[in-house]
Image (cartoon, rainbow, N blue to C red; front, side):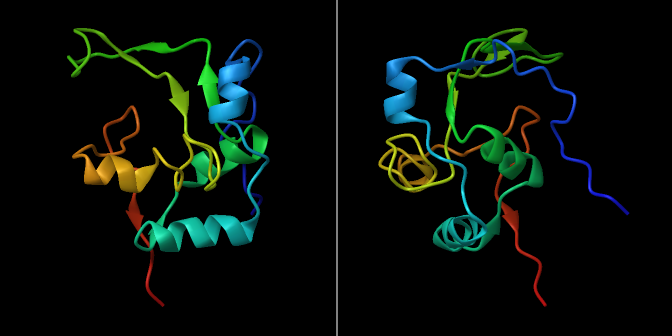
Length: 129
């Protein structure tokens, strides 16, 4: 069985905002398998979703141009949509990376929970062998 990449067919044209601020504070080179495993261990042993990893291998973090997405239910931000300013890189060195200065530990320490638009946590328990 062949694994299908989650974002195959997605039109990324005009999606990323590669302005100077985004490139300096969000974007990093694609993560290696080793760096992904290390970040997952650092975040308490939680696995990152395959779709998040696939996206990071295409463009690791960054601000987005199309940043408002419709919702069928009220959110904490608005009646009918969510707003996403940027996606955190899988890494440690950019300000907005999962293990960076404003990453997962910062969010957890300050009472925030990292969530996907579907409202399911991005932290998923690692399967035990």
